[in-house]
Length: 517
View (cartoon, rainbow, N blue to C red):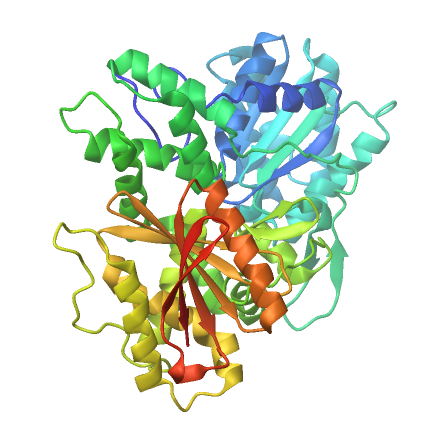
């Protein structure tokens, strides 16, 4: 069977091109061999199911009886009745091991009729472990499907009791749960009208700190496998770095970029060009997907999450990472944020751009920022983007549409107005990414990619001459690191206001086009 890039469900090494997960698998396997009970809790489409599948196979080769099931297929009714849960749990185990371990499967099915309560299930697990010739490792995927049910809490409590008393109560060698939430901190509300809650009994779990995002070094083997198998030419070091740059190593996005290039852009060609990467990102930013739909839904339904995201993206504010902050915890849970040293960051540049597009569209349709697109020509005769003209038209637009707006409006929404203004101009031909810079000016650098060219524009609010000089130094330094000779500076609340005319400055051998609003 020909191999392909996969972005839906389980990835199989013999069927799909995959990043190198050997280091992640090795750490996870070592924890299982050590008899750890732990939870792999990561955002959706993060490779959890694939990792469990590989772990199950690896442990089986080492002589363990690894049992991998999913609560997703058990249905919600099973968790409403104790007898149904016990039967459903054991029946699924019997089914998944029937082919490789028919005798064990038969043993389980033989005892099924007599198991109707959690304490009976506990006793059976002890008997099964005692009679088993191999250590049993239990892996359960999609535990979130059951986390709001009392029976699930009781089931975890039973496993915890046996784990704590394992010197006299035979139990599973290791238990690995996988899902969106960290079951260790889960609380279950007993009734909708009650304040009574059960704390999760899964506080026995070991910390699982494996980074499941992919580094450039882990992306490269997937590209090499594909290039060799399909006889395709790829600059693997460059593509590995760039895919990571835009995706942040988010497993779904890494595979989706490659999938779009291979299946939608390459055609009959035999070379992955740099332009194809830009086209793939534009394609992904414009498509509907479960990942993006989920992110936008979370922002729509959680005002605190939306407000924090707005502060980080549009106001350039730095936020310290603190896992005890419920809003930060929620953003991490959904894959919106990531931890970068001691700071909180948006997870990746593709997420950032999608959220910017969403915010700009809301600003436009809500009517709070006027009409963003003027029927003007922003392109040079050869089709390249005339970025000076873009900024000049934006300046005029602000004078016409926002002359009565106060300073607080510009500080709060000026950046969003600009981003919404350029969105239809670059739509179809490019995209923009934002780099929040730590400085007293809380500036934001926007990198616009259009037709293979890069335009770096710094957005900042005027904070005085001294801060302005510092900002010029920082922009020149940033341009140097981007190997660019020219850049753009857009200043909100400039002291000269409407009288300020766009001007060209030479600063540290860099050409800077400065526009004041």
